Length: 264
Image (cartoon, rainbow, N blue to C red; front, top):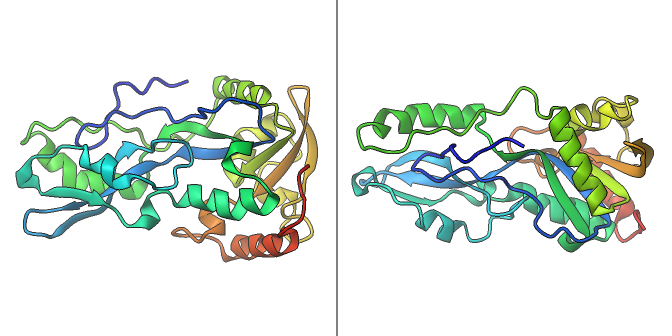
């Protein structure tokens, strides 16, 4: 697993690995893409918005739900002449974690305590919009004020290599889960297809309401397991740019399975 100890967010918080902490046996194993971050609104001394949502710290737990964002951000010190940091809008802090709980786990009868959560990339990454914000607002003043150099990596082009897949397999086997929930295309492309090449993306399972959200039997390194492929929380909760088709399919799935036992 990548060593993140030398990576820093704007204003100096160290990038942390975000992994499952409760390692007792679970019923389901959820595989996402990459860890999120705590986002702050950067306000100038005269009250103008410098950055609407700047990633300033690793999320405190995997699939964070946005709780305690204010207290996390208050612990980050910035020079007074550079203004202040406030929690960004709720849509930037914890929406994927909330969507996981409310739109995936609860509809099939589970709480967090029943699930082992994992990401292909277990640390925060910089997407294109964050990169632009950092280059525009932070880098020009960092040296002038002696601020830490920003070093959070970009989202990698390869989301998992053989070593990382082995680590995920080790977690999957340790979890004792009989069902693997995959969130969107990337966990299929970078994990599942390396053990079962029938599927390379979510639509390969079927792009209609007869196939979406079905359980599929497979084997991963000899372990028999059921796979439940679902759209990423970004799609099912309409977080930013998203697909209406996947949103609608998930809504139909929710109506179909609400109150029913899908996974025993």
